Image (cartoon, rainbow, N blue to C red):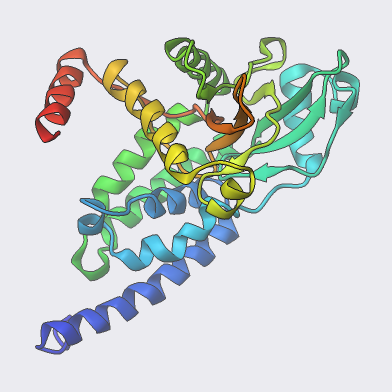
Length: 306
């Protein structure tokens, strides 16, 4: 730091190169270790805009963002041990069909497509079996790193504490299922939102079975939305309306609304040839519940801004 150029523009260029180099090393670390390390990288990548830029330099957000969509998956033999432990039998004894290759892989779990004996198509979310075993040592390492490493003078300690607090609430599939049903209840009657139905008979702490949702469109791919006959302005309005109603009307804030967790589908409108967007919310592991006094203050703030 002492040898940095005096001119501010030159200093920023040098520091950006330092951060980019460090961010690539963090990406390699997360890919090698997986699990909580991938989650930590995703957590950093979500800190974009506003106060996030003050706490985390932009190169970390930009480089680590790839892990929000492309986390490595685990072999099915490893994942089936969770099914046997939680449900008492292998997948072939429980499901009529079970696809061993996951349709999605995240930092804490991966999702497989399956079919129940009654014909219902489901998505089976399975937490990685090594997570709980490795959690204590991983968090101890994160705290140690946070206290010792200060890239460019940035204090990382607050990030570790916030990460640990939010992560523990995500390691409970039954808690996630209850969150899903609660959000669905709060928004029932609204045609522009869809929630998958929970299969409680097959849901446990480490496994979540839900209705498989067809026709999902990524909100980050405008070309696909347009090709499905949707208007982008209506799509943006639906996403805004649903998440804002949850927060400002019900005090229930979705804590992880990125493009891998919320999607759109094209819904037919009765008496019309047009289609309109409906929001599909899949991941309900992390919610923040706002106190009534704070919720009302937020509403007043919005009205004042308008």
